Amino acid sequence: MFVAKMDQTRICTLDLPTEALRTLRQQHEFVCPCCHERVTLKIGRKKRPHFAHRSKTCTGTFSEGETVAHAEGKAQLYAFFQQKGLHVQLEPYLEPLQQRPDLLVEQYAVEFQCSAISSEHLYRRTAGYKQAGYVPIWIPYARHKRAGWQLVSLNQLEQQCLQYDCLPYCMAFSPEEGAFIYYNYCMQMSATMFYTYIERVNPTVQHFPFYVPKAISYEAFLQLCDVQQRMRQRSLLQRLRFSKDGVQDTILRVAYTYYGSIVNVPHYVGIYVPHAFSLPMAPIDWQLYYVVWQQQYQYCLIEQEHHFCTFSSLPPLTDQQREAVRCYAAIVEAVTRKNVPLFSAMYDKIVAHHAQN
Ligand SMILES: [Zn+2]
Image (cartoon, rainbow, N blue to C red):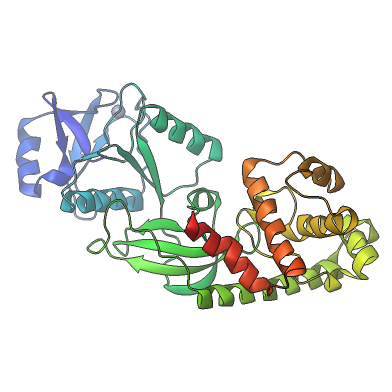
């Protein structure tokens, strides 16, 4: 950790030159602001000067097992906020919350997260900050750094950090590159795989509040849809070939009954819509149920949501799931009733619609 107490004053090793720290070390003792145990000021060659507990038992939430990447990222982000002229505190211990964010920038609690974190833990910490009037900002460690369009896997934390601005994006930070790494226009292809445009943003051009990517162009969106369609086709074929359940696979049976085979389902079944993966079944599955349900009953989804859920063996929808299904219903309507080409309908309902709101 970079912060300790010295005779009741807070001292941050990042604020002082190494020589000054050496002098202080000769004349003073330091204690952990959390557990008030004695800590040692370590000044070496490899790591930035930092404090370390003598015994491994700190009662605070702060762990000694901090990785170099985490410490380094924190130090660089601290410098970034300072250069922007913002009031920033490193590792402040928020007494009433008993939480110690990596950085506190005015009312923002900034966490640079390098390790996996459970969604409950993330939820609890986020809720704690919000209750105390802070705005939490989670910045995951950038595992992917190569710029350009590519298929990447996003873990639970990265997925939780996705911000739904049209096509979702996630801002990560790379201490090795000394830069913010944006995963822009994330189109989800499977539970963990996303097609995304990775962009590096140097701290010198970054601003705060952080830069928000501009809406995707129509041309780029079409290309993205094209990639998704190819992956959809491949997964349909795989499903057919490797289905272990054979005829027991309800979806294969439904597809067989209505379309002769899963590979013949309409081209608008299994498309991307925001939050498509938030439902407890694959997008192809719930979308096929929706299309078949529409054909059979011609009900309005908004009025007959419950009926649709029963038909598809889905539990009652959450807000996110409802958003996904309604967006899908709007696309299907445009394609089937108004003869709008699929990708244009998707662009209208996903990108343009969002831009209007
Ligand atoms: Zn301690």
